[in-house]
Image (tube, rainbow, N blue to C red; front, side, top):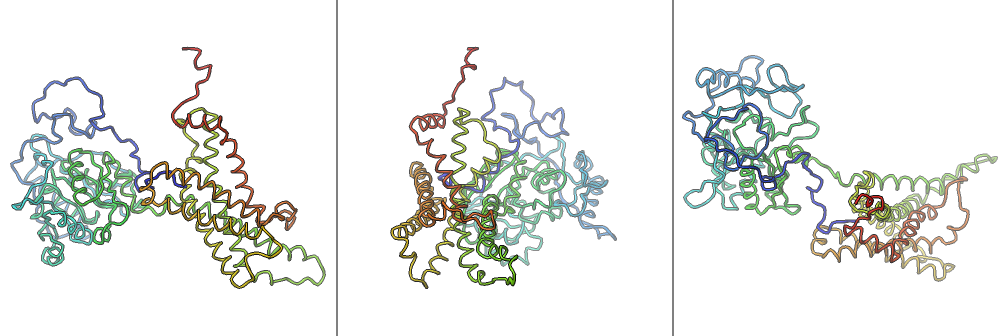
Length: 593
């Protein structure tokens, strides 16, 4: 079943596709010649070659701007013009008329889903994008980079800004206030949301007023409304993007919403965080995983946001650059992705067992007698379809899934013995099978419990669990079944992350391996003692269908037989050395030494 004593976390399958090493991991480079501060880069229009600044070199130019970047008043919307497009046009006109050297076009290639004006077609996840709306500042006039520390108020509390007074913004404000933060909540209409914001402990302000309070801004507004914010005031801020993107709404470029936001405001430092939490979780208390993925191209901004996550008593997980936000934004929309393989496998096996039981118990007798004269369909066999068919199907599915939990480990052991190393990768189907053993085991326990409940409910109205003709086999098969269910419950409880975390690796390995194989042996004995006569006789129905006992005992016996050679001391010793890191070297590979 489970292979990790700490349980399965939501982050284990998220691997940044092309994450770069951190600066501390990079090899020492030769001393670079000194460069005067604020020297423009030779290729300032293109993206940086690495998301990390060179040692001693600031990420953004440090010269102060003499003009404030403010959003102009908007004229009335023209006929057939959207608010976003009218706002962008007005910003472009105002920029060219008043501060032409301040705003520049940010040249880029348009995606296939964009029109000639730079706007993305409806149905995508992003708000309209206009190159004129991008605040790309020349190095000689750029704002100074925001310091990577939070300002303090008179009482020594850290100051932070939350833009948005919705459910998530208020819930996050409450948690920040509880962590001794002073939160300025920016809202389009502070008077309307004043009572809710003050009840959460925040200070209701307008967007412009709130952005003057701190360098760190949590963007807690729907992403499609990002264009309505004063983006000019967000320049050189540390922006925490908490939005999520439905995978179905991904545009052709595959960019995340955090990357799109960074493209809109190149001088800002965008950090993806808090998107895996919901307003309900923040307000009611986090009872599940406390991991919060954090990713950004700016290491200092990412470190500062990670400290905020820690102040909220959560566990930040560094996922590297901002490109990892593509996977992070899809986490809240995942729906039992780790269970998919186990559920599909269990459903197929159960349906197969049910169909075989249906033919053997109800249909075959009628099909074989259809050629007889005066044939009438016998419906009496369908009376026990729930009692017999469902119970038998759950029993067969349960023992088959139990064998499938331990069969891949046996096959993997033989593969390692043949290859002589543990470092060669398994095939994809084997890797998927090995990772799904925990969920297969839990589904096995579920089917076994249903089988036991149905049998107990049926036996309460009968004479007993077994007939007198069974002699010693009756109580033996019942005892094997009872111990199988009991130990399977212990195995399932030990697989819980909270329980597994309190166990040592030796204890966890003993329960999952030794106890698990004992369960498989007891389950096989349960079937053998109950259907001993039916296993060795020809009980085929409809000329080719075996009995349920014959069908479901084959895979467990095969697994046990394959396990026996691995228990031999010589084989076990070789396998142990391979799993400890030893590799078998062939004679041919030593000829050149």
